[in-house]
Image (cartoon, rainbow, N blue to C red; front, side, top):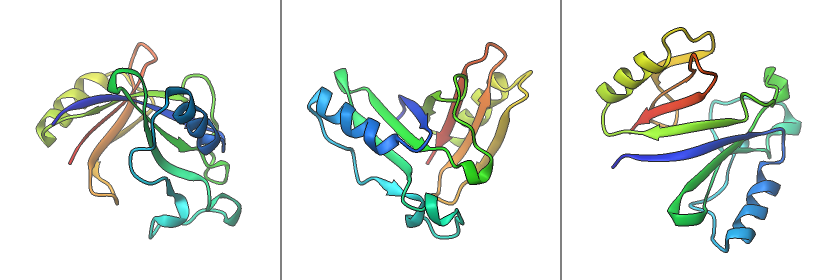
Length: 138
């Protein structure tokens, strides 16, 4: 089933922000908060192991917010321009390839589609209009 959500990057404050959003909208987390320490094969600085790798919370009208903390040990810098992403979950790898191909045209910041450690066929890019996109399929 396809869906659209908003993916937010934080400088180490994802859990605090999402706890605020959960309380504000009177909802709950969708699934558990996944920390970087929960992911086998991902090596991060000891000080960053408890940071949020992935969290989800539902807000108004069923819209889903997702989040991660950016890792300074990996050179990540949270700034306007990379802190908000439109996340498209589509029904097939072919649709990932089609959307990614069009959205990434002229992009200087991108990750081509590939199977990730969590099992999704996943990609990301900054389109020529400065909008960040994630496109994935199970």
